[in-house]
Image (tube, rainbow over all chains, first blue to last red; front, side):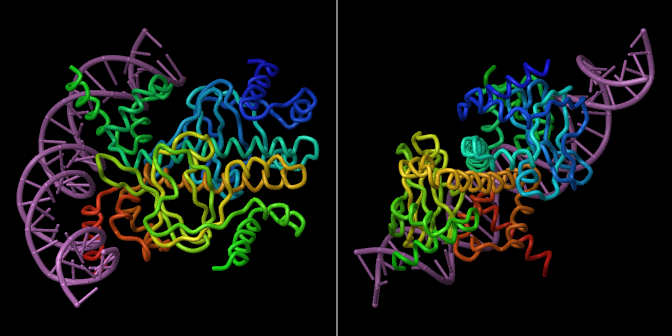
Length: 201
Length: 201
DNA sequence: TCAAAACGTTAACAAAAGATAAGAATTTGG
DNA sequence: CCAAATTCTTATCTTTTGTTAACGTTTTGA
């Protein structure tokens, strides 16, 4: 994907939250960078501060922790979704997890310093601060829903819900990652699938 | 607690995120309201849009869902913490859960409309928008941590972690609410406690 | 003050999940 | 193109959790 198309994807993404006129957009563009993360390469590593937030314009990444030598996948980002180790990026503390490309992934990125400069800008600062607020609110709600699901639903109910909403997760992601995402083991997910098959058959 | 003290609590809370000079603070004050929620009274109800965000200055509340006629407690707010059904408040959609006072609770509240007026204000809008962003980022990180705990830890590990960090939750909240908070049943938490007793004894 | 409700623990049993291993099918990468 | 790695399922066994019920203790509220 060429640079212009990628930047336009970013512009469209921003437009879902705040409307920028041409002048404002031109103010923003110099801060943006395009980069490609090859499959299996890391966007974030434990122990290092995550200095970038990105918009995935093509590809997909997964977030995972390593516990007792095993990878536990907690989340994914696909096209038109943001990508960052938010806690590390926002607090400037060392990251606790990996973020790794599942496919060759093209991103439009913004560094932490660029972000702060944008927020401080007299012209677009207020509007971009609003953008930042709305983004954070959006993800806050996503996480709140997910916590609620963990507290109120069984793994089987969570999986059924996932089947209903039927995100890309189901098409593009190996099942053992989805199992982790649901908070269970791959073996357990396989059994749940079997249970559901029997019922609907 | 008198009005002035309560308002000062709010001012101190804001000061943890952005610094307001006296003029800016005076700009903000007219939008604030003080209210008291009697024990067992609801701050939010399912089906109704949550129109207020509040700062708890005295007391405590719990968030719970009702599933199959049973209450499942997912969260709490204590002194110097915000209080709202964020999803409902932010998206203007009907609330999915109850928020109920555990004790007589005094709050400083702000309505959704007031919030929008403040954000739009030419004088303090940018700064308050930043406040809103930082708050949302703060809670985003809290929820992210909690999701990570659900994905990577066992209930027993989550409970041990809670014992270490030893929040007020442990002192002021019945154990069966804490069990829900951890994503398990009260009976199961009782067994976990028994297991831990045996090990450390 | 006193009866009712709420709370925490324990027991017994059923259901579900974790751990480990094996095997078949598919995908990957050189 | 082919060997190696990955993925998913299944089986077996162990551990944990859920469910229901009972019991004493504490708290609550009229």
